[in-house]
Image 1: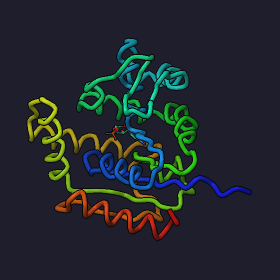
Image 2: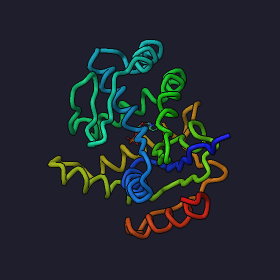
Image 3: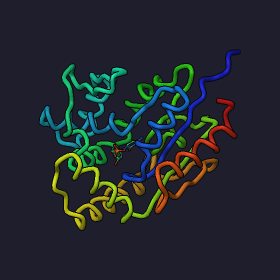
Image 4: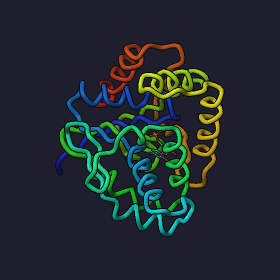
Length: 223
Ligand code: C5P
């Protein structure tokens, strides 16, 4: 039997640097990249665009099953064939995503779609439950974390760079609320897999985090 496609899972709370580290790892290894948070964000945008209640589990799950999204290799993100802009990354969309992500049948509806990203030569999967639920057999799992304040500060800088005018205290509060919802939900709560490397990036540079993650991945996978 052919070897399974190697999958590296990078889970952690919002603002922990997962997105950056996952993309750098994928580039370094020449692997595909799954931004699973973008799927939940796109679903939330699609639900809002259709006037659905975000807690209407049956309607949102039906939408999730047929969701028309595209991730072409040039980095664009498409919903219903149209380009999605900065609204994908706002805190409002993140919060809406976290509400639809708490619905069990919605998570099931997105499961196979996420698994389909595992293609040769390999995949780096970024999310909350990549190592625990979506790819439980992944050979290399990282749980990236950082203090709420450090994460709010990073988010603050990112939003500033994008031309928004965020309020720091509000950001810390939003991050705490989202963490609590993600960690306490009944299905696929945010937690490290038993076999994950836990990496706290508070006070570490991107290069330092990447070097540790790469070292761990190379021990686990002969990539
Ligand atoms: O990672 P990102 O901030 O884009 O994710 C947005 C929201 O989507 C998270 O707060 C979380 O509730 C949800 N999510 C999830 N499982 C994933 C990825 C994201 O529940 N694998």
